[in-house]
Length: 478
Image (cartoon, rainbow, N blue to C red; front, side, top):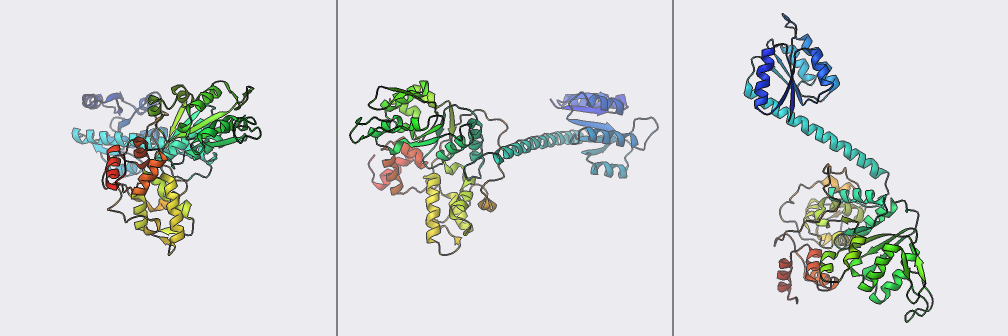
C-alpha cells in the first residue's frame, strides 16, 4: 500500500484529505508543522507528500512552504511533492515547479484531479526508482565484465549477456557444468569463459569432442591405454583425464559417449579414479569437468542410451544457450566481426540477415560471412553476397543499424530476479513463411543426428510436423 504524507496546519483539511485518500486505498500520515513533517520523514517511508504553503496564522507569503519543500527535497531528491495553498502566487508556483515540485494546486481542490495526479506521480516515481536500480545493476555488471576474460566472444543480446553472467558466476566454483544448446551456437565459447575466469585458469584446459571420435577409441582417448591394449597401440599413452589433472576437462557432445565409457566417467566424477585400457593399476586425478551437448539427454535416459546417475553428476548446474534466432541482437555484431572493418552492410542486407532463421547458428553465419567477403563486388555487402533471399516485409523488431558496429553492447537490462539458474529454451513456432530450409540442410541434419527426427527438427528450428512436411516435399525417407 502506497503511503502519502499530508502536511497542513488545518486539522479539518488533514481529516478531509486523509479520508478521501484512505477510501481510495492509500495509507495516510498527517502532521501539522514543517518540523513534525521532517521528523516523521526521518523514520517513515513515504511515497508522496501533499503539503500546505503557509503554517502560521495570518501568513500568506508561502515562505514557510518553500522552506519545507526545499528541506524535503534535500532529504529525498526524487520524492513527489504536491503543493497546495489557498493563496496561489504565480511566481512561487513557477519557482518550485522548476525546482522539482510535482504539482501545484489551489484550495479547495478537485478530488478527481488530485487523485489522478497522485496515481500518475506515484507510478512515475516507482518507474524511475526501478530504472535507477537497473542502471546500478547494469553498471555493476559492466564493471564485472570489464575485469573478466571473455575470450573474444562477440555479442549484443540480453540472452547472451545472461549466459555470460551465469558463466562468470559458475567460474568461481568447482562444480560440474552442463552446457546445452544447438550445434554451432557457441557452447565451446562459454566453456572457454568458465575456465579462463576460474581459479584453475593457469592449469591445463583439455578439450575433447566426444562426437568426433570413433567409438572404439573413445575410452582410450579419455582414460589412456597401455601398449598392446588394442590393435595399433604400440606404446602406452595417457588419456585426457591424466592430461587435465589439476585443471579442467571439456567434454563436447557428451551425449555420444557409449554406455561403457559412461560407467568409467561416472566413477571418475565420483572418486577421481580410473584405469587405463589394458591396465589394472588405478590412477587418481582431480579434474573439473565441463560438458556440452545438443542432445535431449532426458529422452536419451528414457530410451536407455544415457545413464541417469551420470546425468545428475554432470548437470549440477545447466547453462542453456539459446539458438542464434533467439538472439537476434547478436547477428549484426557477429557479422561485423566476421567480415572485418573493410566492409559495410546495405540496409536490405541487414534486414535479410536479421530475418534469416540461421538453423546452423553462429557456425552457419560465419560461413555466410566468409562467402560474402570472398564474392563481394564492392565494399558494401548485399544480401546476395551472403547467399540470402531479399527480406520479406519488415523485421518483427526494430532494426538498430548502430548495432552493426558493436562487439560488446550497452547491454539490455536483465530482469532483477532470475527465477532459476536452469532455464529451458522456448520451442520455436512453425510458420510456412518463417523459414526456408533446403533439402541439403535437412539431409545434413539427418546424417548428423543419425535420423533421430526430434533432434533434426530441434537443430533446424522446426516442429516435427513441419520437418515431416518438408521431407515429403523433397522426397526424403522418414
